[in-house]
Length: 167
Image 1 (cartoon, rainbow, N blue to C red):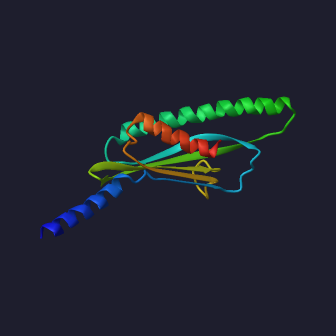
Image 2: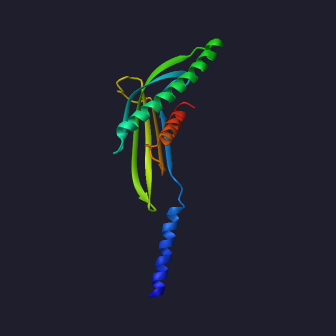
């Protein structure tokens, strides 16, 4: 009987320790509809959807600030490149795109710790009313102990997602 308890205890230790050493997961995907790669893009934030139960108002305010900050940074870098292209006599196209950001977070327990699945989906449309098929869809999902209510983590998530669209 004592050997059975030891055997069961040993098996349980192996099972629980295997969960402890598993790596955090991240999923990324990006879709580009037929956009001209030589174009520059003027992106305007139209809508943000947040799916989290607590602190949504402050989270939306932080997300809007971070997104606008990073989009303005992108526009500034793009304007420098447009100036260089103009000086070289190169033609460039400016395409207006309208952005919809969807931020989600769900929590689960793993090894007695809370793990958050944080997801940021960015959809860029040619139409201001966000109708029709998106021209670009970017999805980034991360399993982490961090939460999107952390300003630093939210900034990193948005920066990484936008960086994939506009390298």
